[in-house]
Image 1 (tube, one colour):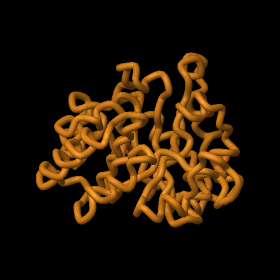
Image 2 (image 1 turned 30 degrees about the horizontal axis):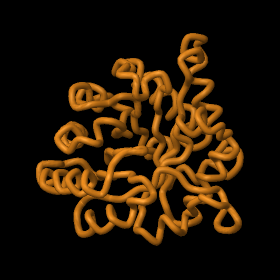
Image 3 (image 1 turned 45 degrees about the vertical axis):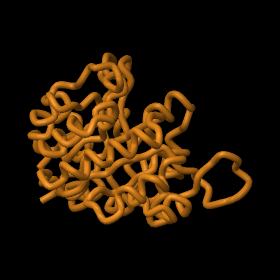
Image 4 (image 1 turned 135 degrees about the vertical axis):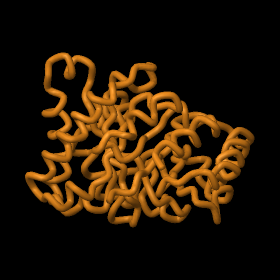
Length: 250
């Protein structure tokens, strides 16, 4: 039985005051949450504060990105070991806003995936198609290619200590959401593709849905057999909305 995981990606939002208020609200409502894992992925400059605020709670901490290098002359970059120093259990890699907004290649994303694991941080590997790719009918091929960048470089076994997040790019921050049936179809295809390399790893892998999941549509999406949680953007900035999604996952 796969344990659901709901992760909030705060992106470049928040202030010390708003984060303190948000985490206080989350902690107050966690007693009603029956989901296995809840994660918040804070901006790097707020990791220390968020780590302090969540210490001793059931809320895990995550980073939003990391370097593919362990250390060195990389101004502005953050290493996996730095994330580890602040008790980050997870880190997002390959988010579409970095793949398409910052030009990150499948190869670079795979290197970041491996760098995270080597630092003892679990990567949340984001994959997904652009609108034109969905319209061309190549959604499954795009997702398979992005997963294969990791498998081909490091072997399928590395997926055992990871989370995959399917995020249709056309549904991120647009208010559009894949229907539960559309999302389930892609999640099932991702799992089936990985099963070609290792059935056991595929069956145990948690695959989140990320693409404008909110308090109103979460229950129907999370009821699908291959959707194991959510990677939540805007709705994770409101404690009540995020907690509603967490409850739905439980």
